[in-house]
Image (cartoon, rainbow, N blue to C red; front, side, top):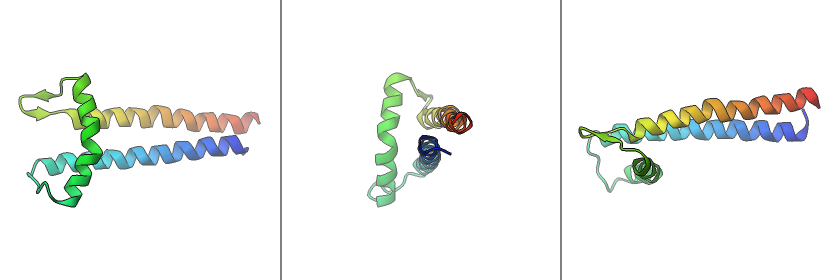
Length: 102
């Protein structure tokens, strides 16, 4: 495997892992929001800081609140899954094609 293919494969792998971790952060934040957590809890603050900016961006682009239920976490998770299934796999396939051609 040449150096460029190795780097692209590593970037794709790390990107896939980061996306998976962020999906879990979004799921945990959504679940915690259902139980009215203590807003001064450090874990709750970290989850809020990690997810709320992305939720705000989604809410600016798409109406996400329907009958009191916010669909921003679901939209985020679906978008991240799409990115994971397309971009990450395209990068991995590109890295494989570089090794076959090189």
